[in-house]
Length: 385
Ligand code: PHB
Image (cartoon, rainbow, N blue to C red; front, side, top):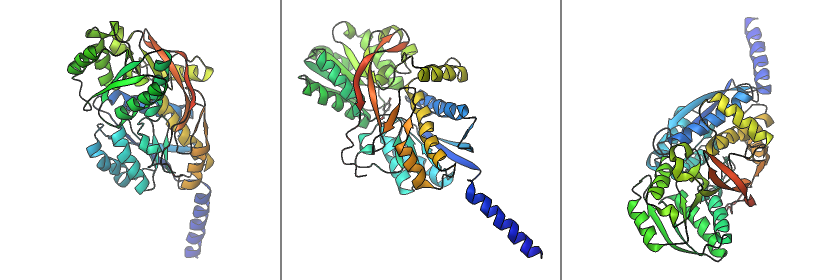
């Protein structure tokens, strides 16, 4: 009699489980919490958690449990770090990272273990190119996108010659080649690509070289702590007076308080700006500053917030049961994201199709002064999905 009773209880417990999902969903943040990109990692996590807070602390009725690994923006440690989250912590969902070289290793580890990955920044073109995958999504951009947008702007302004300067790794190389592609299509010529190893900030010899080449314009990709130093050094060298500096918007996002006077008037292109003044963005910005006093939201916070929105679209479709991977991923892939930057959809390769704003630094804001390119999709070259 006792045996039968236990069996019945077990059976009904199983039935209950079939209709709902497991107790908590494990989210693994693999982000830089130290080094030149530390603030970017912090903003991404803030943004993600803000969206979850706005949903009452749960997604699709599920509690979330967070795990963190500091990837130090170090590609050499990336596979081991990814496996800490995948194998040791057994996370359901990976969210990471900022640095393109680290993200490539993370995407491979996610693919090998069939774990869903949302990339809240790193723009490595290969991730939505040859390495594209049904379980990898990006809430950010691909590296060539801001460069393409600025190359068009620079050519239209009538600049004929340019020098590019960046860190010698995927993000810098792809950003500057995106610039070269559209600048040269518009009649310009890139005279020289100057680089230094990531995350070095010994800019002086390269600034001396720029002064002697005297191009019409300089295009740059730097971000985080390195961007702060570059903008200040360019200004201190007196170059702002003779050679206009333009860049991918990371140059001045999340950095303006530290750059101050040296950043005033800089033109950059990015998929976000500080004065969009839409009800959606105003609500996001108000809630962000209320939740994280004294921190201004930036593009990284938006990308973190939208990573959570993409996940929510998937989890809602499976009523919180993240074990239904195919169904969840299909919903993530087809979602329309009501982003603070403006509504977007993902391309087949999993990258946002989005507008790129032309922004000008005014005080402590990146002010949109127009749209440089509308609905820009990344080329997804080599993606077979
Ligand atoms: C990248 O490595 O892909 C990267 C890093 C920082 C940025 C943008 C892109 O701000």
